[in-house]
Amino acid sequence: DYVVVKMIPDNRLPPRHLHSVHTGKTFAVIKWESPYDSPDQDMLYAVAVKDLVRKTDKIYKVKSRNSTVEYTIKKLEPGGKYHVIVQLGNMSKESSMKIGTVPLSAPDALKIITENDHILLFWKSLALKESNFNESRGYEIHMFDSLLNVTAYLGNTTENFFKVSNLKIGHNYSFTVQARCLYSGQMCGEPATLLYDELGTGEDSSASKTDRPTDVAAIVVPVLFLLLVTLGIGFVVLYMRHRRLQNSFTAFANSHYSSRLGSAIFSSGDDLGDEDDEAPMITGFSDDVPMVIA
Image 1 (cartoon, one colour):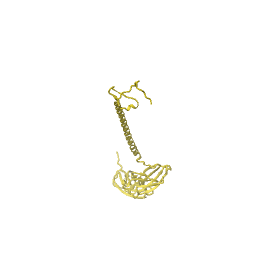
Image 2 (cartoon, rainbow, N blue to C red; image 1 turned 90 degrees about the vertical axis):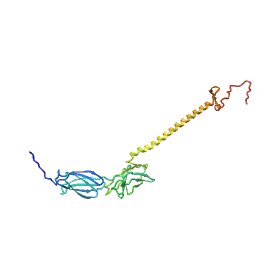
Image 3 (cartoon, one colour; image 1 turned 135 degrees about the vertical axis):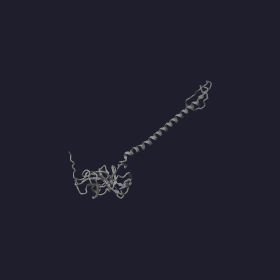
Image 4 (tube, rainbow, N blue to C red; image 1 turned 135 degrees about the horizontal axis):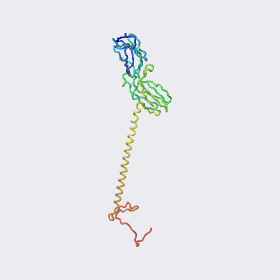
């Protein structure tokens, strides 16, 4: 024997399993389940979104008969913080959670140029890749001194460059550039970081690991090429000298060859340069020739 019991739905129960599915820069997708399984009629939900930064509220109405409800909250701000409350339209018990939207991206191509008594920071406009960013919002720049372990706010600008002066010799600095923070510094963009040492060379921390192998190769390859060219020229010079010495010796030997004797005749001293091969050799003096001594 068995009996079927149907429970009376309690519309005072809160929605179940409220959670965030996905968050972007200007939207958030949330999901929850109905207060009880298999609703037999449309259920009206009230979704309240409280902006914790601006201190404003918005209420959206959602009607669904499904056991699982998915809803997208739009027109949010990048880097914002929100408190979401979901409950039935009859103001029953509520379910709530906090969400944060994705902040604006960091500026690209942050570079540094060293001048005589100051440096200039340059970066690409954030509006090129962020449709939600207006140049009138501007950027703010911070500097960290690793020697003093102090972070300083340098200021903000609506341009794509910033001048930094009064840097101390022997100090290492880290500069950050980001979309200007709004509402008491609570809604900021992601920072782009640049390292700057006391020698005045700027290095982008995000690109340093990929640039160094290229720089080393750019130096090593020309050096190896010049070394190979030098070695090649050296071998050619040695070969030409060897050929020249060989030809000189052959010409010298041929110039002293005696066809009568069938061999080359060499003498010492200044006679080595004499080209008269057929001159008779002096073997001695006769007794009847007077010797004159000056």
